[in-house]
Amino acid sequence: MTADIIPPAFVLIRPQMGENIGAAARAMWNFGLDRMRLVAPRDGWPNPSAIAMASGAGRLLDAAQAFDGVGAAIADCTHVYATTARPRELTKPVMTPEAAMRDAARRAAVGERVAVMFGPERAGMENADVALASTIVSVPVNPEFPSLNLAQCVLLMGYEWRRATTETAPVRLEGQRTELADRVEIERLGDHYEQRLEEAGFFYPDHKAEGMRLNLRNLWARQALTRAEVQMLHGIMRQMVRWKERG
Amino acid sequence: MTADIIPPAFVLIRPQMGENIGAAARAMWNFGLDRMRLVAPRDGWPNPSAIAMASGAGRLLDAAQAFDGVGAAIADCTHVYATTARPRELTKPVMTPEAAMRDAARRAAVGERVAVMFGPERAGMENADVALASTIVSVPVNPEFPSLNLAQCVLLMGYEWRRATTETAPVRLEGQRTELADRVEIERLGDHYEQRLEEAGFFYPDHKAEGMRLNLRNLWARQALTRAEVQMLHGIMRQMVRWKERG
Image 1 (cartoon, rainbow over the protein chains, first blue to last red):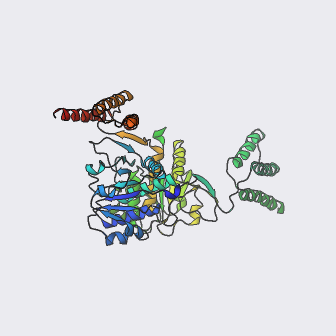
Image 2: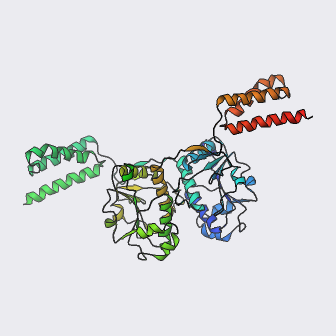
Image 3: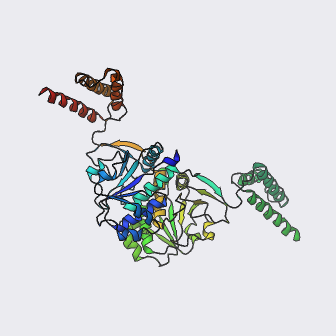
């Protein structure tokens, strides 16, 4: 099934600066999206400033389709998202970027063709264009400073599309020697330290000794120590003993 | 409790272009973050290009603290995230931006002081700096084009911080008249259409009539229609009848 998924088209409506079109292409390609559509770009198409700015993502601009109107740009789509403020006149579902791109991924997985529309830099989308959308996407910005630019908005939607379609472990341990120590190894490490520190007179005074031993065990236990780290901690203690024995 | 939360400091390590510092300030403030720290900015501090670029978020630059070294910049922090590739030499937990900022929000909620470090534009972070971090944050970019710039990386981390700390309904219906019709109203609408269409001879031929009626009921039922929309649909049918009766 996955092979048949058509990723969303990102539709830039009446974009003004070529640089912003190029930056939008880069932001799309950062997250693996390459289906750009343009509606009536102000400075015509192709646009040399867009190409200069898109370095590395120029292929998207070569393949970008330009249309005269929004209707033509989304004619083949079954579900269209508009990234914009909601016009007061229209009743529409409003989704967060995450919910919208999860919805888009579900739809694409069953063969739907989806598109995400972005308005021009300053004026924003016209109501007639927003009315063509199925759903509005609202980015939860700081209400005191809601000034996302075109490429930033494209970046966030691309990011959420990739999150919705790519499995990434939320937390993982990486490194050359990432095998974690098991509980037995942690216990042996505790034994080793406790024994040596006992000899060294560390657990003093007596009435605090039990608490100190407990804290020491806990210190190792609550870390996710790798085997290599456990070996290093053994080595540190051995070295301290050797140093002491040399006198 | 919420009042006591200290939001993360965003630490820019040896940033080069003033414009990028300004763009990072804007990206932070887009998501309500205002604690910027700078480590050895190449062109000194304060920086006029940064101020020019930050328009609207200049307050962050006025309040930004500059430090000579990374250690001093994060000295008061209990947990530090590094947005960078993992150096091969270090074993570290690696988190997605979402997992990292949820972790940061949990820590901040119990009084921890957290920071997020960002490397210089081209060279990236030095291993000695990464070693100071508790956790590495890896943005799931397209491996063919992993070219996020400084302000884009700041934007994504700010976005995830805000997502982790602000409740936003993932899907909501907005508009002037958003009260949804209940099932009785939907049924009445179905009755109205079915009755009139029956009179109009719509359900033909007979062996298909039952399926057609079912599809008609389903058409209304599976939409989330508002009361206003139901009234409009009644009005459409009434108008068609009037039009027919006028002959």
